[in-house]
Image (cartoon, helix red, strand yellow):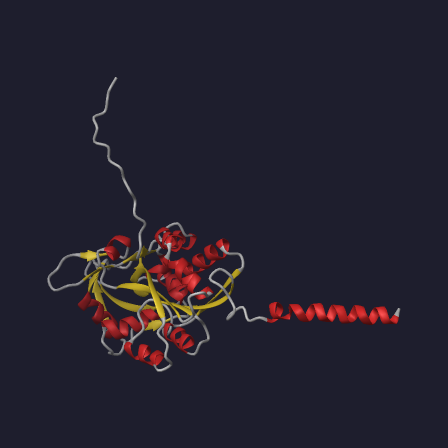
Length: 315
């Protein structure tokens, strides 16, 4: 009996040893386009869209697990560079300096442009501002800003950013005010949601946020705030009286002043979960998700319409 137990133990050990490669493989490295594990770093403004993309992808491919990690845009790029993740989703292309840094490691990250969004200006519904041009926005960001309401009252306007070191802050600093310091009237809270909640309850405050956060008119968060806040239309100035709101139409025409493109970058191989997720987001299902949630997908499905020119026979 003792000998039988010994043979049984050896059999179990041998069987377990044969299966160890499956139990101990690294799903972050040993994966396929539709299975395994993947870390994706993204900027907070894209949260709702990325959560929807993750949910839909995993519903299609149950053996895949996407781990979304919220980070500032620069932190996402750093994590990507250090190989802490294989995929990032950001609202700008890599800079020349970042591209050279990857090149020094013999890396050339692949990317897809998947949608267009923009930096939105929102304010309380009672704030007496509906339109701003580029020069006024620069003044708003760099100097104490006063607006005059319909009864000639002066109103000091305060500014909020969505989150410290967010892509919105970097965009405004680098592209709009060209490296100047922000005004003392500018402040920042802990998240986009906090900024929206503050604007909804405080008059004469303008928040700069990623439009993607409130692009979905069917979302419960948008519905809860749509009567409390309003978008400010933006114009280019220089004598033009044309102003645009952030929406799919103005993004498509490149008419909105602060339009931005969303990029999916990956540094993994062709037969990898990173490639699978990138392809999905850039493909028909991912593009439809962006469209339904209020952003402009970069690829829209063609529709074939057959027109019959024969005369209709009326009986």
